[in-house]
Image (cartoon, rainbow, N blue to C red; front, side, top):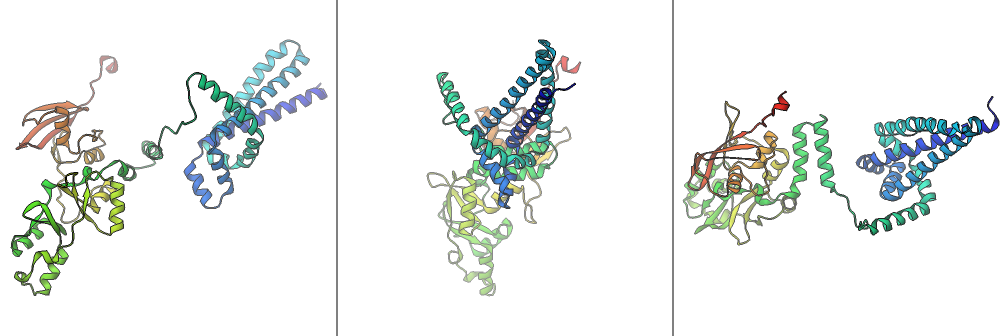
Length: 431
């Protein structure tokens, strides 16, 4: 027969287990809830989401309160159960209490609430937020004392936690989330590349994506107007730099629209046109400017075209707004763009790649991991790794790829054969 004391003990244990489950589920929910979704919920007027964000902004105090509450609930439940069972069964009651409470707490106060909180973190976090705010406030003095003791103890062992920042930056966390969702199949590769391209803008400089001066189409102001028109039509570009005396002395930018409008005003008589009168001023930008800043500058100046110069003021290339957009969305092809991208797949699975093809384009297209910190193009990577300018026919192996120089024009590697080296399975792996 259950006595009154036994009934009180059972009710107390039941209440304490529910309390322990509350703290366990709250800990998981509050620490795994998406701050991005909570921020959006707060923007839409959710007061509970705002409370969750405030709580997670003081993680040490929040975790301290949760651990303290959970520990108190579990210890008290064990003490009550031990006292009741010892009274009922003697010394063996302590063993029964330990086994019984361990199983009950593990299943119903730890695993079950945490599992539910992992499945519905935002729902759990917003549900417990008002109560947890009160608990954190009540237990605040105790938690602060515990924090002080912990920090001082760690300092004895040379650990300073006063200036500890997040290991991952916001950009790294977003990138990791994108890669994770892509692996799980919730984001397709194209979308992953686009989102990653936006994040990469802050890590890239103008020099990384500019059209190099060797590939620029420039006009000599001294050329005849018929020749100028032929060059404009052949280039397929709407804006072309114009130089005088030497290619480094760019005096302006010719817009095809201005050229043909001026020709129309003179009834097609191009002999009356003076090229310098229809040029627009050239905009010069440093090759070390970050891409995100250059994008902002393009939008602010409401222009699409800039000449890139180095620290000595010498022309290195050009960059357009389209070049930056392509870093985000991938290649933008129109009727004037060449169909070939400089990459041709061979029957044996290798690729014949023009030396000027950017490494970033290869990595994006084929999911390769070729390093692009020290070199921008595939030819530049081979030269950097070889520490020399190779001759045609030379072969190099690095970063899991085989590079064979097929063609060399003067000192430029114009065509390479690139093939991925598959890892060789050991005898143990092959069974």
